Image (tube, rainbow, N blue to C red):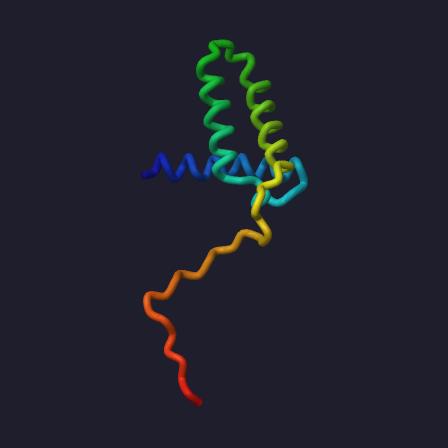
Length: 96
């Protein structure tokens, strides 16, 4: 459980750093896309044995996260909000 919490917070921290560099809100970056980009880049970094290339790989990862900012997501008309939970029973309307 601790590993999942740490990984989640590291992804959010990287998203916040990239958003600060791009001068935008961290909520403009999709968590799932950021997670997949970070996962791909770190897997690629682990596969290469040249440890001197790590700074350039991390820079490329941040550039890819910035390019994801400009991707338009179709069908999104409103800001992200937490939706209210659906009620189990309909409201009783009073006759007044």
